[in-house]
Length: 298
Length: 179
Image 1 (cartoon, chains in turn green, brown):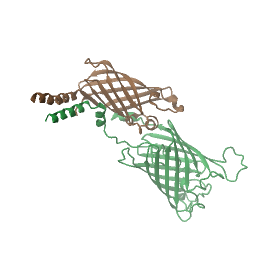
Image 2 (cartoon, chains in turn purple, red):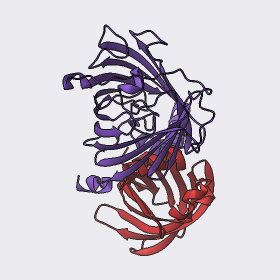
Image 3 (cartoon, chains in turn orange, red):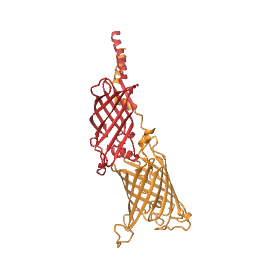
Image 4 (spheres, helix red, strand yellow):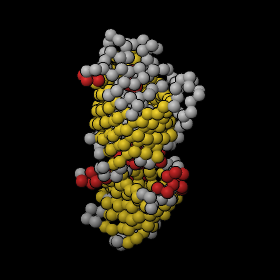
């Protein structure tokens, strides 16, 4: 009896002496937060990423691409023989929906896309991955390289639809899988079909607090690899500086929009013979919405 | 027998009574400000937990770094991902003691303790105003924290944007703690 009472009193005194921090640990609700920064921008390098921006965020995108012409050693042009630039605007209407517009100089493609974030990965793994749907339309306005502009305007529109599944595996490593359906207005790049299916892979490895290594590969089915174009490959660096994100890319694509990059790369990824295309995408982020005020109103 | 038993039974009852000395807040406010000529940065956390033992003067504070809300969404992401690394160090924890505990209302007191933030434990001393309210006690005040003290790396390019000493403001409205 005495033993029991002593044990009881000792137990209660230890509860009393229990560290205040342990009480706070118990009081603090379990974290139910969304995983952030699976990737750092709307695009990994060229292809779409699982990320969208937060509501009221406006983005200005300026992209450049430089490359040399094959067998053109006598060229007198400084730095690179050819140059293409892309100008884009993106706006997040809500935390889940982002809308974008763009135009590219070399291929004259006007593109527009809508992106909806269906599922967001959670830190506690209640939702183990993120899922984003992307619908893109590209309007071809001129012939370029191996693309011939059709006479009728209905053939100048092409579409791509993507379901992007991504998971941030660790603080350094993220991976995404992007099954993509492309419907082209003309039978290009392969004759006899307007429908292509592509499977995309994208990855990010964080090198430092502000720098990450990124790469993408999109395997396109339904055409003959080689004579009818090559699969898209990119390798580069994402660098974040405050409101600016710089994406340095090496690739085999000359385009920026979501149809031509998957279907119209004229050569494989290679460092030789004018096959290497290098470029920088600079994205400047402007916030039109003060998030701290939204919280205060609630 | 009963002479032994009675005090033994009374002992746990006595200690139980002391539970009421504890006061808690679950919606404490902590804001921080960084003022430079380039950029002003501020963020607020309205979900700070703090508990205090009024008899002993012990205080504990705990907050999730992800709960800081910034004006700019991207800045909030950068803060968590690249500066405080909240995926590695999700919480800021402070535990300390209020020196010279007393009963007089509205008075400035000193809290001395250890701040555990970004993997660094550092002893700090904070002056706090103590006010009594209908529910309990209110602690509020401000102090400064050096960015370099807590091992937070700022890239050279952005050094002009972020102040070396961050001003921190806090307000904790406590109420009695019941288990």
